[in-house]
Length: 123
Length: 106
Image (tube, rainbow over all chains, first blue to last red; front, side):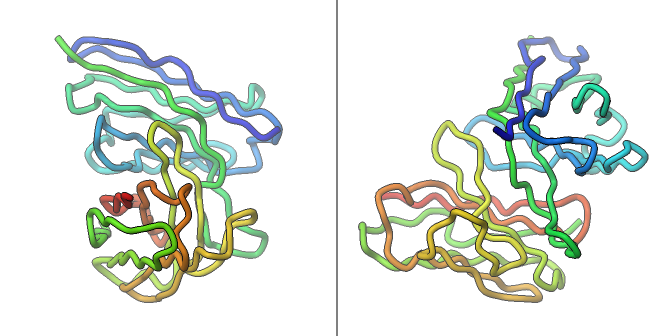
């Protein structure tokens, strides 16, 4: 079964750091771009970052660039999100997702999602 | 960044109704537009990609249209499982922005 499982969420104080992990199973994650998407309580989806197959390209939403770092370890079929200097507004469920495009197509979409891990930033 | 604006933000309908949700991009995104459904407390699920291609396993009552800046998601005959929140997302450029969502209620 194709699956993504996130971990590493928790309750932290403003200014703290946290590293989220996402383990892929049922497919070879090194063949795909991978993304992080977050959802604040009661709010909509917010795309955070993505990374290419070998980890040589990373893209971020401007508001998180410099504080968040996406990375991957293909030997472990794992994706990570390091979050520094956390703020109350970073409180959210963080989803890991597979970025897929059909063969010979550039129509990327998020076709496999994890169940999410919750990050709460509060003093 | 490309801004995605959905309308309406919420919508009430009956089982069996035909409903249409609109998504507008702040610039031309050709057909790089995806639609997702999110049930309460669950992860999103892709319905349509490339503006009009139905993801495998998604019922044919869902359809998408549009290109450029204006897009629609139509559900031809609402079923009880369809009451959820729907999001559009552009994949034309990064950041791959989402619309703010449309909550479909009974």
